[in-house]
Image (cartoon, rainbow, N blue to C red; front, side, top):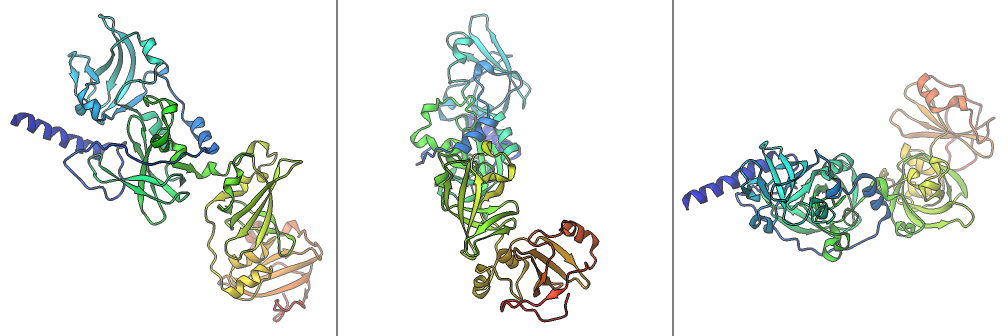
Length: 479
């Protein structure tokens, strides 16, 4: 009896040590080391949402492999559940003895094909990467061909191919939570966990990807902006999952990737069926672009990382474009953008909604109420920062550099004038001036940002004309 207890303790200690060094075993912050391993039941409440983009991500990257299609070299990890601890799954090929699933836990099994035994039973063969021994799973009835078409597969085995692909595709990526229910680890060297609730549609970052269970083999650990970590075990390709597609309902539904997470890179792939769900979302510009300013009724050049709320999306009847109404989150100004929602219908890349916008916050600009009032009117004032000028007037058409760190943002106006915004060496607006511009709204292409930045020398400018606008300061030495 003492020998049995001693052996059991050694086994638990060995498993704990293995868990700490195995790169497929990952834990959330705060999990405590323990000498006991718990096999917790899956009890959770879930929600199911049909997301086209998540389905695309899965279908493009995670192929389902039926047991009939397994090829030698595919890797699995032994992840036994309660039932598997009673019924032994594998047999030692050398001795012919059945092996406890506990002793094989966390070990990597490499598929080595299937054979028929002398007594007519089919064997699914493996080489254990950890102990270099051969093992097999014996099919209790029928031929291999009869058995492999069923979803049962080989018990205890979590498919590591999904884990490896998920790690490659998702590490450090931004996701959005699609359910309220997740878990945190409570044991560093065991499987204890605690259910937690989080906000839906919250932005999180993937900090670790490891192995989960046979049913849900990919464990995705994410972290929110406050540093809180939680995870979900999810099914990806469902290879050797042991569950049919129609079984992922009710409590099981959230363990599909698309019902737990939404990938930032795919969230902006809008179809005619799901565009309404984007109303109210926060987005930011990924590229510099032009949008119609509702206040000025003019096209304004918008810089990268400008943040907006989507107010409405109105598909056109006669073409593939939609009018997207957006509200700037800082100033409250409304803008209108024309974009193609369906990536496959966008004839030019910069017309696709997902190329123009990305989900989530952009650059945060802190302004005073007085400055916001000027920005809403499209006015540039003394003392503004570069970010505030971009919010008011958009991205400059080109930049000119002078001595002592002074530089000018130059804007071509529709009245054949040029607006010069002068910045001091600390990046604060010193003055604004309007000059006659021979190029009108289209400035001289030779004086672009790259050329001026490369020369870093003063550029001869047109004669200065004082502005009569009360919001401009025309004082000072002419440029």
